[in-house]
Length: 258
Image (tube, rainbow, N blue to C red):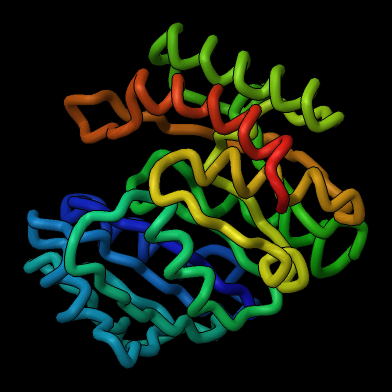
Protein backbone atom coordinates (compact mmCIF):
# COMPACT_ATOMS: atom_id res chain seq x y z
CA UNK A 1 0.00 0.00 0.00
CA UNK A 2 1.11 3.56 -0.75
CA UNK A 3 0.70 6.16 2.01
CA UNK A 4 0.25 9.73 0.76
CA UNK A 5 0.96 12.45 3.34
CA UNK A 6 -0.70 15.78 2.49
CA UNK A 7 0.10 18.72 4.79
CA UNK A 8 -2.56 21.41 4.28
CA UNK A 9 -2.89 24.97 5.53
CA UNK A 10 -5.63 27.17 4.06
CA UNK A 11 -5.96 25.18 0.82
CA UNK A 12 -9.75 25.09 0.49
CA UNK A 13 -9.52 26.25 -3.12
CA UNK A 14 -7.39 23.31 -4.23
CA UNK A 15 -7.90 20.49 -1.73
CA UNK A 16 -10.70 18.73 -3.62
CA UNK A 17 -8.82 18.87 -6.92
CA UNK A 18 -5.61 17.43 -5.46
CA UNK A 19 -7.55 14.56 -3.86
CA UNK A 20 -9.06 13.76 -7.27
CA UNK A 21 -5.58 13.84 -8.83
CA UNK A 22 -4.22 11.56 -6.10
CA UNK A 23 -7.04 9.05 -6.63
CA UNK A 24 -6.23 8.84 -10.35
CA UNK A 25 -2.50 8.25 -9.87
CA UNK A 26 -1.17 4.66 -9.76
CA UNK A 27 -4.72 3.27 -10.17
CA UNK A 28 -3.61 -0.32 -9.52
CA UNK A 29 -2.04 0.53 -6.16
CA UNK A 30 -4.19 0.80 -3.00
CA UNK A 31 -3.63 4.16 -1.32
CA UNK A 32 -3.92 5.55 2.18
CA UNK A 33 -4.25 9.34 1.94
CA UNK A 34 -3.63 11.21 5.19
CA UNK A 35 -4.41 14.92 5.01
CA UNK A 36 -3.08 16.86 8.00
CA UNK A 37 -4.92 20.15 8.40
CA UNK A 38 -2.47 22.49 10.09
CA UNK A 39 -4.90 24.89 11.75
CA UNK A 40 -6.62 26.18 8.61
CA UNK A 41 -9.12 29.03 8.91
CA UNK A 42 -10.45 29.17 5.33
CA UNK A 43 -12.81 26.18 5.39
CA UNK A 44 -10.25 23.48 4.59
CA UNK A 45 -10.94 21.78 7.92
CA UNK A 46 -14.71 21.76 7.42
CA UNK A 47 -14.28 20.27 3.94
CA UNK A 48 -12.05 17.52 5.28
CA UNK A 49 -14.46 16.63 8.07
CA UNK A 50 -17.31 16.44 5.57
CA UNK A 51 -15.41 14.30 3.04
CA UNK A 52 -13.03 12.23 5.16
CA UNK A 53 -13.33 12.61 8.91
CA UNK A 54 -11.03 11.20 11.55
CA UNK A 55 -12.03 7.59 10.88
CA UNK A 56 -11.56 7.94 7.12
CA UNK A 57 -13.70 7.37 4.05
CA UNK A 58 -13.07 4.92 1.22
CA UNK A 59 -13.27 6.17 -2.35
CA UNK A 60 -12.69 4.42 -5.65
CA UNK A 61 -13.57 6.95 -8.35
CA UNK A 62 -14.36 10.26 -6.62
CA UNK A 63 -15.60 13.33 -8.46
CA UNK A 64 -16.31 16.91 -7.37
CA UNK A 65 -20.01 17.81 -7.31
CA UNK A 66 -21.54 21.23 -7.93
CA UNK A 67 -21.04 22.14 -4.26
CA UNK A 68 -17.33 21.33 -4.27
CA UNK A 69 -17.76 18.10 -2.31
CA UNK A 70 -16.56 14.62 -3.23
CA UNK A 71 -19.05 12.18 -4.68
CA UNK A 72 -18.52 8.64 -5.94
CA UNK A 73 -18.95 7.97 -9.64
CA UNK A 74 -22.24 6.26 -10.53
CA UNK A 75 -20.26 3.40 -12.06
CA UNK A 76 -16.90 3.21 -10.25
CA UNK A 77 -14.06 1.87 -12.37
CA UNK A 78 -11.75 -0.97 -11.41
CA UNK A 79 -9.05 1.12 -9.76
CA UNK A 80 -7.89 0.15 -6.27
CA UNK A 81 -9.65 1.86 -3.35
CA UNK A 82 -8.30 5.00 -1.74
CA UNK A 83 -8.75 5.51 2.00
CA UNK A 84 -9.01 9.25 2.76
CA UNK A 85 -8.38 10.30 6.34
CA UNK A 86 -8.11 13.72 8.02
CA UNK A 87 -5.93 14.62 11.01
CA UNK A 88 -6.47 18.05 12.53
CA UNK A 89 -4.06 20.38 14.32
CA UNK A 90 -5.77 22.84 16.64
CA UNK A 91 -3.17 25.49 15.79
CA UNK A 92 -0.73 26.06 12.98
CA UNK A 93 2.57 24.27 13.62
CA UNK A 94 4.17 24.52 10.18
CA UNK A 95 4.89 22.06 7.38
CA UNK A 96 7.33 20.09 9.50
CA UNK A 97 4.78 19.62 12.25
CA UNK A 98 2.17 18.47 9.74
CA UNK A 99 4.59 16.02 8.13
CA UNK A 100 5.58 14.52 11.46
CA UNK A 101 1.92 13.95 12.34
CA UNK A 102 1.20 12.37 8.97
CA UNK A 103 4.27 10.16 8.88
CA UNK A 104 3.59 8.88 12.39
CA UNK A 105 0.06 7.85 11.36
CA UNK A 106 1.01 6.24 8.04
CA UNK A 107 0.99 2.46 7.60
CA UNK A 108 1.94 1.93 3.93
CA UNK A 109 4.96 0.02 2.68
CA UNK A 110 5.90 3.09 0.62
CA UNK A 111 5.29 6.74 1.51
CA UNK A 112 5.12 9.87 -0.66
CA UNK A 113 4.77 13.52 0.40
CA UNK A 114 2.23 15.54 -1.59
CA UNK A 115 1.53 19.27 -1.14
CA UNK A 116 -2.14 20.26 -1.01
CA UNK A 117 -1.85 22.81 -3.79
CA UNK A 118 -1.65 21.94 -7.50
CA UNK A 119 2.06 22.67 -8.02
CA UNK A 120 2.92 18.97 -8.29
CA UNK A 121 1.29 16.32 -10.47
CA UNK A 122 0.72 12.87 -8.89
CA UNK A 123 1.04 11.30 -12.35
CA UNK A 124 4.80 11.75 -11.85
CA UNK A 125 4.73 9.12 -9.11
CA UNK A 126 4.83 6.24 -11.61
CA UNK A 127 8.58 6.30 -12.27
CA UNK A 128 9.35 6.89 -8.60
CA UNK A 129 7.17 4.00 -7.50
CA UNK A 130 8.68 1.70 -10.11
CA UNK A 131 12.20 2.26 -8.77
CA UNK A 132 11.22 1.33 -5.21
CA UNK A 133 8.38 -1.19 -5.46
CA UNK A 134 8.98 -2.98 -8.78
CA UNK A 135 12.63 -2.71 -9.80
CA UNK A 136 13.69 -2.54 -6.13
CA UNK A 137 16.81 -0.54 -6.85
CA UNK A 138 15.97 2.48 -4.65
CA UNK A 139 15.03 3.15 -1.05
CA UNK A 140 14.38 6.86 -1.58
CA UNK A 141 13.43 8.71 -4.78
CA UNK A 142 13.55 12.51 -5.05
CA UNK A 143 11.77 14.49 -7.70
CA UNK A 144 13.64 17.32 -9.39
CA UNK A 145 12.09 20.43 -10.84
CA UNK A 146 15.36 21.39 -12.57
CA UNK A 147 15.15 19.06 -15.54
CA UNK A 148 13.70 19.07 -19.03
CA UNK A 149 10.20 18.28 -17.73
CA UNK A 150 7.57 21.05 -18.03
CA UNK A 151 7.84 23.64 -15.29
CA UNK A 152 6.46 27.12 -14.83
CA UNK A 153 9.05 29.90 -15.06
CA UNK A 154 8.67 32.05 -11.95
CA UNK A 155 11.10 33.70 -9.56
CA UNK A 156 14.83 33.90 -10.35
CA UNK A 157 15.66 34.45 -6.67
CA UNK A 158 13.80 31.27 -5.70
CA UNK A 159 15.65 29.36 -8.40
CA UNK A 160 19.05 30.58 -7.25
CA UNK A 161 18.23 29.95 -3.58
CA UNK A 162 17.17 26.38 -4.34
CA UNK A 163 20.29 25.71 -6.37
CA UNK A 164 22.51 27.19 -3.66
CA UNK A 165 20.87 25.14 -0.91
CA UNK A 166 21.22 21.95 -2.96
CA UNK A 167 24.85 22.77 -3.82
CA UNK A 168 25.84 23.32 -0.20
CA UNK A 169 23.90 20.21 0.85
CA UNK A 170 25.79 18.12 -1.69
CA UNK A 171 29.15 19.41 -0.45
CA UNK A 172 28.32 18.80 3.21
CA UNK A 173 26.64 15.43 2.77
CA UNK A 174 28.55 14.07 -0.26
CA UNK A 175 25.49 13.76 -2.49
CA UNK A 176 24.54 14.67 -6.08
CA UNK A 177 20.94 15.86 -5.69
CA UNK A 178 19.71 18.84 -7.70
CA UNK A 179 16.60 19.80 -5.71
CA UNK A 180 16.49 18.87 -2.01
CA UNK A 181 13.74 21.42 -1.32
CA UNK A 182 11.36 19.59 -3.64
CA UNK A 183 8.09 18.32 -2.18
CA UNK A 184 8.25 14.93 -3.90
CA UNK A 185 10.21 12.48 -1.79
CA UNK A 186 9.05 8.87 -2.01
CA UNK A 187 10.57 6.39 0.44
CA UNK A 188 10.26 2.88 1.76
CA UNK A 189 8.79 2.08 5.17
CA UNK A 190 12.28 1.27 6.47
CA UNK A 191 13.44 4.79 5.61
CA UNK A 192 10.37 6.37 7.25
CA UNK A 193 10.95 4.36 10.41
CA UNK A 194 14.55 5.58 10.58
CA UNK A 195 13.61 9.27 10.61
CA UNK A 196 13.68 11.32 13.80
CA UNK A 197 12.23 14.63 12.65
CA UNK A 198 11.94 17.56 15.05
CA UNK A 199 11.46 20.62 12.81
CA UNK A 200 8.06 22.26 12.64
CA UNK A 201 8.86 24.72 9.85
CA UNK A 202 10.11 24.32 6.26
CA UNK A 203 13.46 23.27 7.74
CA UNK A 204 12.01 19.77 7.79
CA UNK A 205 13.03 19.45 4.12
CA UNK A 206 16.68 19.84 5.07
CA UNK A 207 16.40 17.71 8.21
CA UNK A 208 14.73 14.85 6.35
CA UNK A 209 17.35 14.90 3.60
CA UNK A 210 20.19 15.20 6.12
CA UNK A 211 19.04 12.12 8.04
CA UNK A 212 18.65 10.12 4.83
CA UNK A 213 22.10 11.14 3.54
CA UNK A 214 23.87 10.54 6.85
CA UNK A 215 22.45 7.04 7.12
CA UNK A 216 24.78 5.96 4.26
CA UNK A 217 22.79 2.78 3.65
CA UNK A 218 19.85 4.12 1.68
CA UNK A 219 19.95 3.94 -2.11
CA UNK A 220 18.93 7.41 -3.31
CA UNK A 221 17.62 8.12 -6.82
CA UNK A 222 16.35 11.29 -8.49
CA UNK A 223 13.87 11.67 -11.36
CA UNK A 224 12.61 14.65 -13.29
CA UNK A 225 9.12 15.91 -12.48
CA UNK A 226 6.85 18.60 -13.85
CA UNK A 227 6.19 21.69 -11.76
CA UNK A 228 3.23 24.07 -11.94
CA UNK A 229 4.45 26.69 -9.48
CA UNK A 230 2.12 29.34 -8.12
CA UNK A 231 2.73 32.98 -7.26
CA UNK A 232 2.29 34.60 -3.86
CA UNK A 233 -1.03 36.02 -5.06
CA UNK A 234 -2.08 32.45 -5.82
CA UNK A 235 -1.17 31.23 -2.33
CA UNK A 236 2.55 30.44 -2.26
CA UNK A 237 3.77 30.44 1.36
CA UNK A 238 7.55 29.92 1.46
CA UNK A 239 9.61 33.14 1.62
CA UNK A 240 13.19 34.44 1.88
CA UNK A 241 13.30 33.85 5.64
CA UNK A 242 12.77 30.14 5.03
CA UNK A 243 15.72 30.20 2.62
CA UNK A 244 18.00 31.76 5.24
CA UNK A 245 16.87 29.24 7.84
CA UNK A 246 17.58 26.41 5.38
CA UNK A 247 21.22 27.54 5.18
CA UNK A 248 21.47 27.40 8.98
CA UNK A 249 19.83 23.97 9.07
CA UNK A 250 22.29 22.63 6.49
CA UNK A 251 25.14 23.12 8.96
CA UNK A 252 23.16 22.26 12.08
CA UNK A 253 21.96 18.86 10.88
CA UNK A 254 25.32 17.91 9.42
CA UNK A 255 27.07 17.98 12.77
CA UNK A 256 24.37 17.24 15.35
CA UNK A 257 23.53 13.64 16.32
CA UNK A 258 20.96 11.98 14.06
